[in-house]
Length: 469
Ligand SMILES: Cc1cc2nc3c(=O)[nH]c(=O)nc-3n(C[C@H](O)[C@H](O)[C@H](O)COP(=O)(O)OP(=O)(O)OC[C@H]3O[C@@H](n4cnc5c(N)ncnc54)[C@H](O)[C@@H]3O)c2cc1C
Image (cartoon, rainbow, N blue to C red):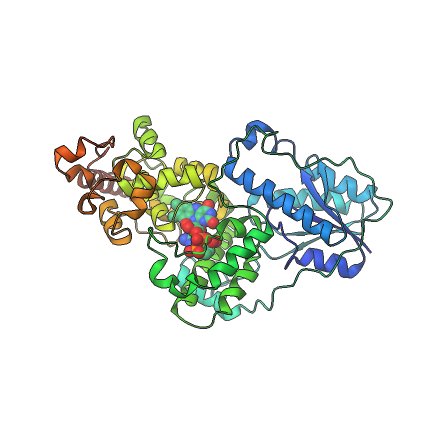
């Protein structure tokens, strides 16, 4: 049996990689990565610099791991819908194995690849693994997808039996001798015109495993009190690893479970189930990427305001937590979850700007930028999503700062202009004495919280009432 194992950017690992293990057990293995010239052209790569850096590092690590195991990753340029069926036929492969993707464009690609392979009598086998349970398989009593997280998570927990993660294979067969292909090297950041950002997490399976080990070895025990604190390193920071599959979600679930029962592990598992929820939602409703989950939000009168947009993206709104989030995003390709919620809510509700603009901006700059989770996070924050924050609840960025960054350490790290601001004013620096403020180059708020709140409520009420009429 000759199998092509098609790695595709969401499973850049050799541990707990079912297609690889199944192929190795069946016979000859050809590991393949298709390098789409459209995706890897400098212009396009520069539109997602952080994800590209992480991806290239992870691909490099995967190449090294496969070489250590006795095989080789073939990197072939072209469009996968054309390359995969052509090479599979040329190489006389019996089957092509890969992991299933949830996104609509990935599903469409796989449908076309499947058609191309089927025409040549070659099997295309998709394996689960992006999620803990197959997307579309968790249903309520009526046989439909849950619209509320808590019963969804309960149903997942009842069904979940992830079993142990598969270890790294002991070895792989060498590439068959008759394989020829016009392969290319994985491009460097430099070739794509991208500067290295030293603020990003390192990509690759080894770095991912080290992060997981460090997290389950300590911080997970205090996850429940610490996870919301923007000033503490209380979360796992595994989101990019889960996005690129340098760790499987099963590996992460099981590593947390092995810590033993307790509130923190339960809570951590819940967060993995929020991830699960967003993927199952997108599987069920692929048009979520362009439409609100709640149809009554369609046609919402978002404002056009370039000055406000610029202030939000540059971290110059005058609200320290919102600004810290904007700057952390650009510097680290990461934003603390609490800060994401506050910043996203601020954009949609305080500034009344279309949440989809913020969603695209996050997708551009986040290393963990994931279509399903990012969309769910934005729709939750704007109040138009599935089991979202109700539209009439509006985060007060000052109160959020006081509660989840009480000493202002998060703010001071990312908004250094406020380094000398006394803690008492750190979340509302405009209230500090004028003499102090004169020393800071920090803007006054772009909107007043109470005024912005009232404006959003009036706008949303008007829009939703019109929809009902
Ligand atoms: C506006 C907005 C946009 C977001 N965009 C993304 C995104 O593009 N990619 C992304 O991975 N997450 C996104 N999230 C969810 C969450 O903020 C991140 O997953 C989390 O901050 C990552 O940090 P961590 O790995 O330390 O999380 P931990 O707290 O350690 O959680 C463990 C894992 O659970 C998952 N998770 C945690 N919280 C959530 C959540 N609320 N929803 C879904 N999954 C969750 C992540 O995979 C995370 O790595 C977004 C949230 C919001 C509010």
